[in-house]
Length: 102
Image 1 (cartoon, rainbow, N blue to C red):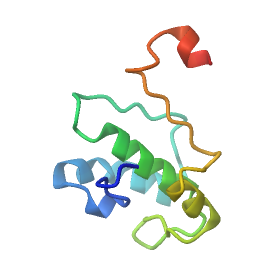
Image 2: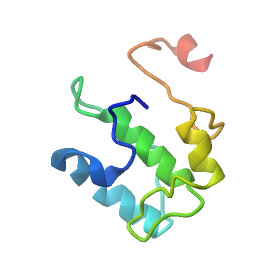
Image 3: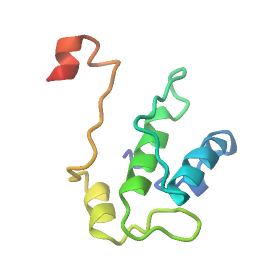
Image 4: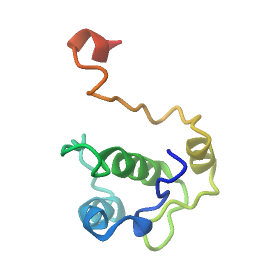
């Protein structure tokens, strides 16, 4: 994540933080969707939200507030941009089927 991006959803701007109520409930109830689609105009925090959600889903020791612990192996590898469980696909750069397949 960028150096200025929040690492936890409780530190997101209010409008963006509202997004997290449904995914947090899904994580608590262990009923995650098969996919999440983030769409909207440039600069609204789609990538930031997606990365925080991915980190939270993969965390091994969630806090009672459904926050990533930042101490487990998954969180540490995510923070170091070395996680094998997360693959970021940027549709703005990869805009053809062949780009996405590769």
